[in-house]
Length: 148
Image 1 (cartoon, rainbow, N blue to C red):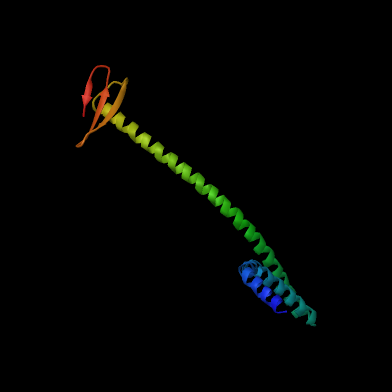
Image 2: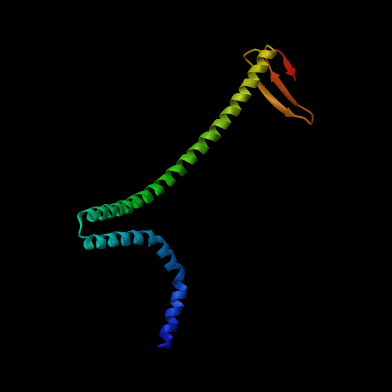
């Protein structure tokens, strides 16, 4: 007898966390079921038609709330997945737009230098050389070499 009690206590200590998690998961469902049952019992006890209609409305509202909570939980899961997908897509679009803006800025700078120094449209290439004090931009034109 003492061994059985000791084993039961040991098992309950081991499974206490699991029982608590299960309790928290089904707590709302059990509450709604009890509300429905209590309303049903009150309907059986009531004799007047007015009270009966009020209690039947309350019971139907409780059932509707339960169904709505189930649907809301499903929609929450779906929406979180969709939000994650949208965030990933937005991150990809943002990185693409940032890269595109950088490319456009470089093209605009190059076109401004072309207009400023009346370079031909047939520029063969350009190179950037870093020095300690400044950046040197060299354009190789068909006729001249410009240093900035």
